[in-house]
Length: 185
Image (cartoon, rainbow, N blue to C red; front, side, top):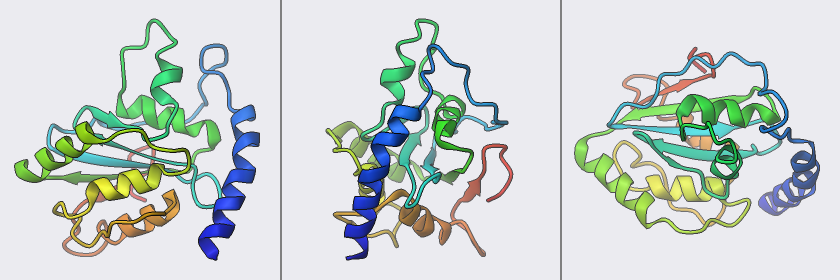
């Protein structure tokens, strides 16, 4: 029941937010400090846009490769003929059109685990709107250090963030959580 109510709230809010989102080709980028290092070659970075009830979006970088399930980033940014391609800093800044509450969960993986994530990204297909967090979460299932993450048919970005929080707190933490300015969450 809680998921159904949240789904309806997200559906009701989505059209208004989409209409209000700035056009990156005609309006300046939001003024926020983004001070992020690009992902290392063996690093997975989960990006959570948490600017609405339940969160607005979830995406993932595996090294330099971006998975933006049901997202608009590549389509919008590629309209700029001078755009050099996806980067973590640019993707994070793009997410700020909804507000500044962006969290980045960073994890260094062993070679076999990283290769499995890359294979899953290559095999991933179309993601329906509102299922971005499901796609990201299910991509991580069973891959160390994400052993505690379970497969799901429905989740939302904030719930995925709460799951990742457990992997970035305490000793020994498997990863770190950062804000846009690279400070800890």
